[in-house]
Image (tube, rainbow, N blue to C red; front, top):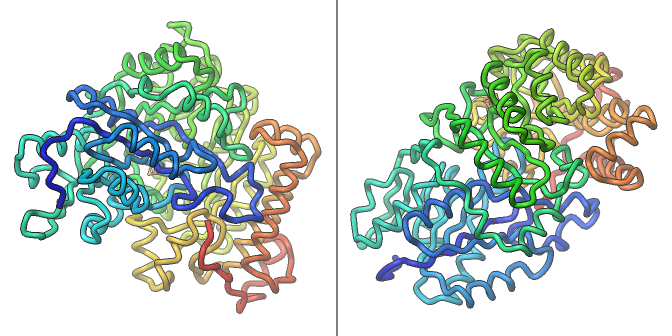
Length: 537
Ligand code: SF4
């Protein structure tokens, strides 16, 4: 256990979304590389930093993801310069986006080499999904699960004041006798009390990297202005969808919370003053009622705050009315990411858990959005336990019948740690090897099968139906390429890559290339099991 006398200087290290331990060039050489580099704004890291500043600590932020090459050498140099008393890894909690569980071993090893006796704290997905594991393994001195905005500061103050640590919710630590204690609770966070995110700690050079290391080829690409920032207006959700990790990541008792409107406006104004030209609202659930949406949109208009924006983790559809959509459009929203999920009401409500959603309303939302000239992304999920073959067919029919959607994403249901889906497939024995989840973190291949589908069938949908539905006209190709910041040549590479991915999983497949053809031939290639490489992302 670390025996440092007192902590004053803190270095917050932000892990990259992917490629954590290696240089970006070292992985997946056949992947179109414009898709491999991406950053999200340091939402939670700047929040933790803001709290630490208020508590009187000196704080620096270091984002590993902003380095395309030499990231660990750069970290080494940063550690030499700053000589922190504590190194804390803080990851933004992404409910939907791909983020690796990462124990930060390499960061902490380098930190200990450079700064003797440095105190090490891990937060993020790994200690949330596997509490205490990294402390037990000696990777770090402390780990905290869940929302750590205040918990990091509480820990450092408690250490400085030599107080008992047992009272800190979410903490795992080793006591002086060598025994590891793991809190069963999650920290609880009143988001109205959060400090302003400490973007003042991010230097000009780093800010330039946030504007240049963009999710090209992805639906969150900031198409109107590359100087964009993610801003969080709320946390958690009132629902508990089967595949969603929101409760596992934040804590089941952390109910839906919204920041006061004036506080959200203050963050927007601060971003605009900082030269930001586009904002992505980074919520698990952007709003739960029409009133909230209209109040938000009206406030932007009333204050004459003009900027392009969208809800980057998906817009909840059930609160939407035509008026709410029109108000958001008037207030600058230019894209709507629609979690349509399924073309079947039973699947929506009972299998997934979207209690307030119907396909009829989804159809209306698409019509209204199209009428308003919004860019529309449709998100579907396929392969839930309890979904029949016909349900999957209906989802594909729904997608085919809505060309208003500029781009449809067909995700294969992926059991994430702590979700109802994971519990279901483990209990039923459908997921034979839960370690697969650590190797395949993108929803590119079915990790289990049910009586309703085989893995190759979902693969056919993802690679071939996806291509046909999305890119069946040159105008659609042109529009989508512009929406996600790639050339049409680059988009073609992405399309080719998608098919290559299918054949990498199913090298011998030579069957039909559409689910509608496979629908009446269940089990045609029953023996075709995906070949999952040892390392893949
Ligand atoms: S609506 Fe469902 S998927 Fe979306 S945040 Fe809530 S629980 Fe998660």
